[in-house]
Length: 144
Image (cartoon, rainbow, N blue to C red; front, side, top):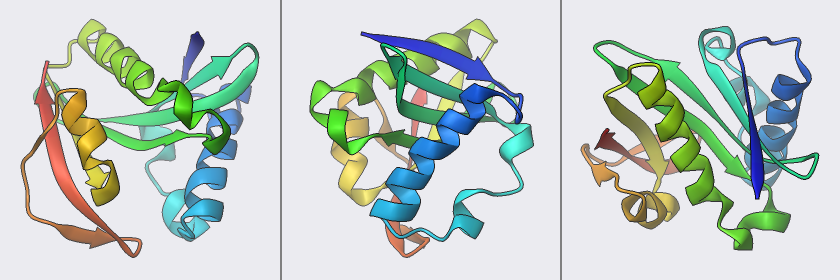
C-alpha cells in the first residue's frame, strides 16, 4: 500500500523525493534534459509522492489552470515497483485531492506508450500528436 504526501514547499523532503524519482525516470531512463525536466513551474505546482513503507516510489505534480482544470504532469513510477500497479493508485489519489480542492477536470500530456494506461483510468485523447523532449505525446483529459 502507498502512503501519500503532498507539498508546495520546494525545500521539503517530499519535494526532494519527487525530484529524485523524476530524475531517475525521465532524465536517466528517458534521456530528458534536466533543463526541460525541472522547469519554471516547480513553485507553481502541487507535488505528490507515494511512499512504499518509507521509500519514495511514485510521483506526479499538479498545475492549477483556469475554471477548475488541473494539469497532471511528471507522472513517474520507479522501475523496481512498476509491476505493482502503483500508477493507477497514484492517479486515484490525484483525483481525490483535486476534487477536494474544487477541481472539475484533469488534463495531461501522455507519452504515446502510456496512452493505454491513461485510458484504463478514464482519460480520453483530446488532441493531435505532438513531440516534447524528443518523445511523442497526445493530450488527454478526464471530467471529474
